[in-house]
Length: 460
Ligand code: PMP
Image 1 (cartoon, rainbow, N blue to C red):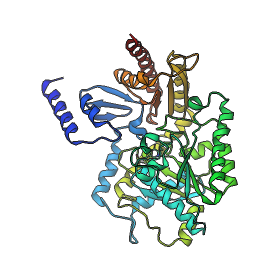
Image 2: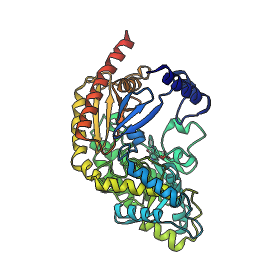
Image 3: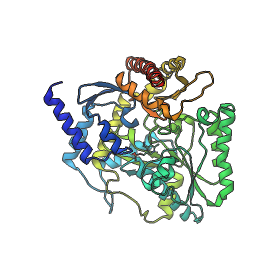
């Protein structure tokens, strides 16, 4: 690298440290270690400013479903910016991109869901859910039904309501969260918390925590249950097979709304447009964002069932909620082109029938590695649990930071994987090919061996 180029990068890093507060970051530590400046991307690869090429097995932040570098998305945004860069959907107005997008999403969603409320992000969408379910019960003449039940280690966003709905203890510690009216039950994390019983029994037990909580609070106090189909940021935690049937039984028995947070799983990641279809679930509200635009521009929303929409519309009057950018025309145009690409290239079908099963097969080969305690996944997500002892499945002490070491080893091997504690997770673009999956697995395997070396070196 030329000196001039190195100087530019150093100057950018210094400016970044001086002025840019990063999300979910220890700024003092970051300033010491320096940031990686990401410069461009194409397909499933990203390049940093130093010219290092990395296979992005996280699709950015679980969002770049169609992969990077889609010129037709840039063209759609450019065209929309020229005709109507902004108009709102308040005060009796609407515009074609928002109309077409709402109608398109309704056609892809489960049959009982026909309306979309647009937001700017997943967090705003979950804020919308909170307000919408409370409004729903007020209109139904049951104003005491206000509490929302969520799960520990869930992630539902970073706004006050989003972080409260989420079950991340370290987030709750900052800012006196959760807000009142939100409670959390145990999560269905078999590898982490349930290995003293079979996955089936553990699935039933953790689902029944919902029933116990409803009975403790009183059915007349509970508005809704919110859950991710698999906990993404929590570590790609996939409930045992027995879990959802029991949850469905409980939700049907008590008069409680079901919010399925599909911010990660929506738009194809599990091999159907929505995980509700993959898992046979019937949510009342679905949270969407990320893959909706493949992250090319911010957008989120709530897909609303007829059950909820009918009450809001026929009995509700004004729903006093909305954002300047609800249904932003440029974001909607980008989302429409993104969905067109997913359809034209049959990417969702491929995840279900071809690349998804192939990824899961190849991922399982990593379970032979001495560092690996469990490999799990579905569709285009996966998790690798790192353990200190493969036979007893004892995990590393936190002082080892095995996950962080592995994340560094991945970068050194040309791969982006994320670490949640000692769980390594992946969520690649849906357009990833079989050859690229082979490359991902090869690099992951290399990184695991490098991690083992790093851990051994620490021990000496
Ligand atoms: N819900 C889930 C399941 C998520 O994974 C996320 C983001 N990682 C959100 C909500 C929040 O979305 P956003 O960051 O767009 O606010």
